[in-house]
Image (cartoon, rainbow, N blue to C red; front, side, top):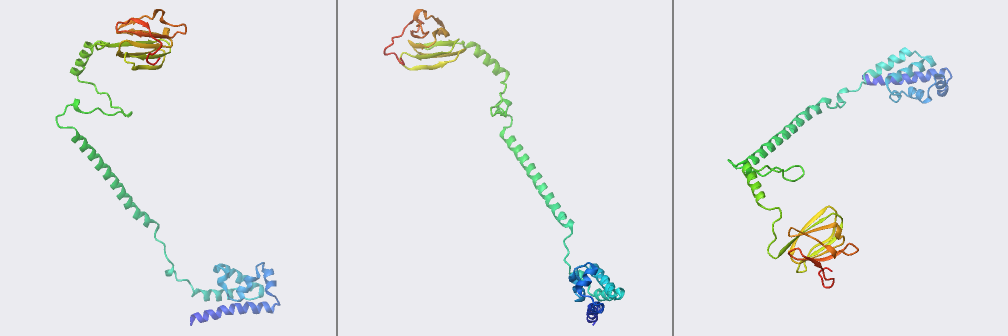
Length: 281
């Protein structure tokens, strides 16, 4: 019953505004021009469609100004509007409430702590496993000399210092071996020292090529093969030869273009090499 009385009062508001406007001989448009509002606003007031005007504060403002223009009592209409709309307050219990802002963080915090704990446990397990493997890889009572050398960042094993007795034995063995060991019987050792760049070819008695190509200045090569050795030099003055520890003298065997084609026997004797039928010639 209270709702029906409120609806009657709302309809009364629109009828009173319309009747007062018509008594003054005003149209909707004329009234809207005087109030400087859209004519649609006055139509909504007279049709009692207050919800389309927006918030209640806007409906009250338009209602008061319109009542003053047409000669109605603003206080009576506003009181009538307030009494009618007071019983139609929205049910706030039906408005959905969002979850508290802190609930997500309360759930996320334990999850983060759990992940951190698992990560720390995994690191600890890995460290203990590696330590156990290292202890098992070194037998009990093994000396430091049996442990393989560590690997340096470059990928090569770090040099390990030998025990004192090993170093001494190595030094004695090195002293006992001559710098240039004597060649085996029937073998010849030829040493070439290049003071200048030169082309060189060396073949042994069986025609096997021992050296072939261009050698740079300030370089040296030592070859062994069955004597006699055939040697072809592109720049003979820039090459010093030694056969079995004896210096080799080319004498008049160097051509005008500084090249030389020679044969060197096991005793270091030098002769001109035959140009035809020589290996590599």
